[in-house]
Image (cartoon, rainbow, N blue to C red; front, side):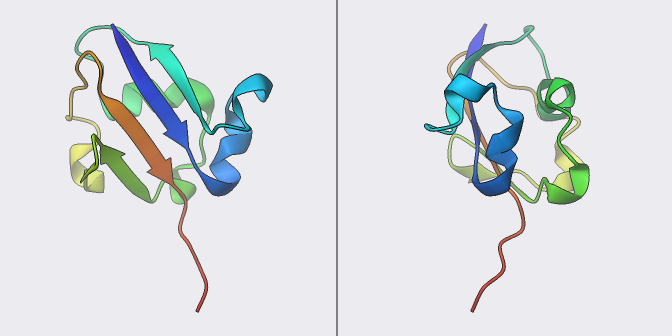
Length: 84
């Protein structure tokens, strides 16, 4: 099945080079894959996986290993953001 995978800010460096400018890529994943299973091959530092949204809905850290993705989902991840 296919999902859209988006990484923002410094996490975009973990996308293939040709996908970094748009911060997104189409990704083939196994049916029943969890959020953590999808991000594992990208070697994201988990301390930087801060804001996780599936189809615009926040997924708390304790649910990311259980939350199963479905065909057409959009998984977007942001690192912690500082500023003021």
